[in-house]
Length: 336
Image 1: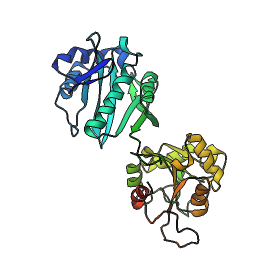
Image 2 (image 1 turned 180 degrees about the vertical axis):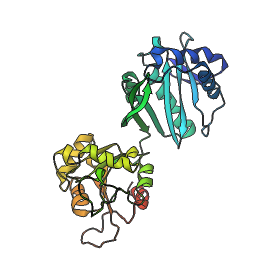
Image 3 (image 1 turned 120 degrees about the vertical axis):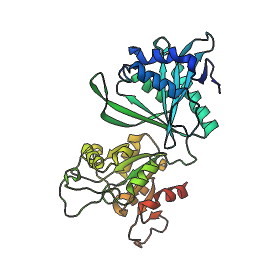
Image 4 (image 1 turned 180 degrees about the horizontal axis):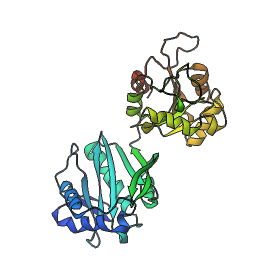
């Protein structure tokens, strides 16, 4: 296996590459925003794992050495590790070769090879807050920042946020974003509770919500679009964190951050403008016609009505409907 770009060759890591591998893992200019300096034993164990033969079902990283074709000098590493069908990418370059476009060039080559050779269409990357050069590499390669998780990683005793980037091969569908209503669509709106849901003694997911969001998040950007009046964006996120759904949600739209309540086409126009996309690339999923479905249709969005009771109302025959979130993925596929 050997890949090449205009300036680089990419070859599997081998025993002869120990010096490069070691230097990259101890150079503070390389690792300062990646991890604390590992012990020699940890570096050796990581090295031994990465020189093993790799295939798509391997649990260890595919690790490729970047070599400058004009000079023959080895300048860094790139590669990925598979998890649940998604390739988590990473790259490390010697300081003197950073900022010259090599990381972007090699990453784009790696993604193209992974698609053509192994039909891998979904990629992710985790970048420590403040690592702006690495984020630029991802953005130039088409990755989109999907989520920021505060205080998840510690380097040098300092806690940093993780920035989660994702890229996937565009599908034939023009739908790229799905909006979900909150109460009784993703989380149960308990009628006997008052105040903010994040403060309720107990909170629950709607049946099928976790599986639906987990599957759809691999192909679409997922947002919550709610008419909640008392809850700010941070309150809504806190409620979702309590049931573990926040990991699948890119963001939250509500009256507090849009300045308008749900129930009119203008609410959805503002969301579309904020996302810098087109109305027909957005799908709204909700359980009420007057607040969720009809205004979204008026704004030009696609819709799926969560009609649990199979209510028969005039004029809804052509609206896609489901009785359970378990049916959502198949219904969306039929819309494509």
